[in-house]
Length: 198
Ligand SMILES: [Zn+2]
Image (cartoon, rainbow, N blue to C red; front, side):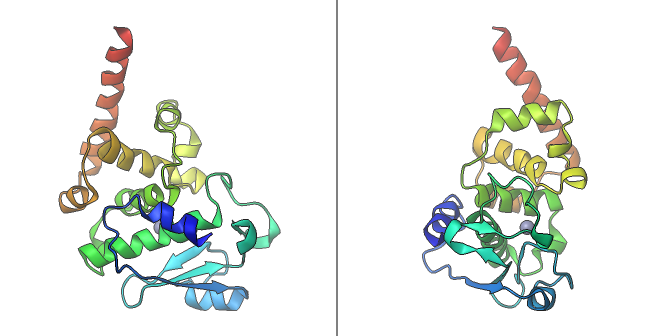
């Protein structure tokens, strides 16, 4: 499971040789409530990006690389979100905080913070065309408010990193505005439509 976390983290150009993280499993609800920083036992995982490099994770089945959902139900999008996804996602938040300041979550918009963490967490397990199609048809899966998933944010980061060839450093040094990134996504549709017309 940790090897798979490392594989995912290797997709980040912010990862350094001496990057170290501590991972804590909170098997009892009260521990998650206390350490998870949300005063709730419903969270999946969280990272302390300001003081320590600690990652707190809810009760999980480590051997099968699976987080145990609150209430014993099933997690949303479990195929794309094994336990290693959640840990790499939180570690990505720590990498960003170490590079760009411990107060990053106040500086940068949610689409950038969560989109980048989702990008690193998924470790390449993201079909751009499929997700772009879901975005074009206004699928609730792409809307964080409706789905609780970061796919829509991830799509924006994929566009900048994979389609435009930017680096994470470039994106964080000069973050696009909500309007700019919206226009980029729209224009990408026009570009791909005209390419398929030919
Ligand atoms: Zn996150």
